[in-house]
Image (cartoon, rainbow, N blue to C red; front, side, top):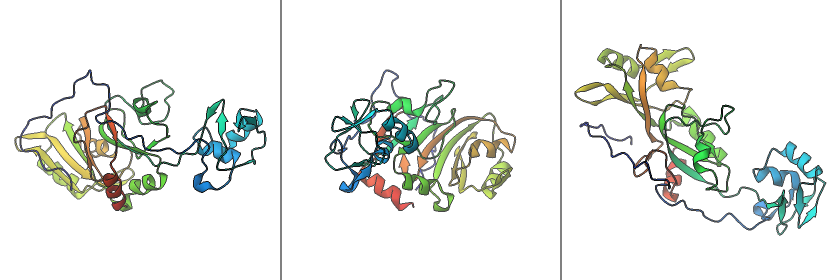
Amino acid sequence: MPPPKRNDRRKPTEPKKRAARPASKPKTGKTGKPGQVVQNQPMRLNKYVAHAGVCSRRQAVEYIKDGLVTVNEQKILEPGYEIQANDVVRFKGNIIQPEERKVYILMNKPKGVITTMNDEKGRKTVFDLIKGKIPERVYPVGRLDRETVGLLLLTNDGDLAKRLSHPSHKAPKVYYVTLEKNLKPSDLDKIMRGIELEDGLAEVDKAFYLYKDKKDEVAIEIHIGRNRIVRRIFQSLGYEVKKLDRVYYAGLTKKDLPRGFWRHLTDQEVIMLKHFV
């Protein structure tokens, strides 16, 4: 269930800025032996390289033909060469292996960080926060815009990510919204009934004031995931969103996870996530 309403105006303690480590030590788990083939079945070399997260399968063909890939210390120039279970494959001298272990990371995204893999403007991304700390390549489930903070799930489980992102599964998301002016009760009612936007009806599951004596701070629960949907809901009624914080996502909360930190999900949390879909 979503977090309860806050009846007072006390704010959680801000994390000390000097902290530089994750809130909890990541669980590294086992990534398999070098050269391990998924389910011990032979795999074409170009597919093996691609599954190791080096590049696309098409680009892998070029790398192999250029002699950048070795198998058991021997250059193999044939992309269709079949890799066996005990083979050791290297790309530019570094051992590579397919990404088998499923990784699930929960991040409390800070402001000013974007969720794309790379940014042509050189801005900081969420991947900079985990760079060099996990061997697997992960991707964000959905997006948070640069100015929005809060919960972001990253994983290499493509099937789960796709299902969580689909509105038919109704994975709930709760945002705390701070506006530049008080929200009229009549506009709060309009939001609850659903707001018609240029790309269709924006359905809202719940919306309420966070405090009895303040009308510029609102909690909103939705299950849709369209681009900048929360900001556009309020903008359509003439309100500017000053702060936007996702505090709840599909059963996950920010408990013990300061801003800018991340952690691996527990086994129980992964099971719970899969129950949503």
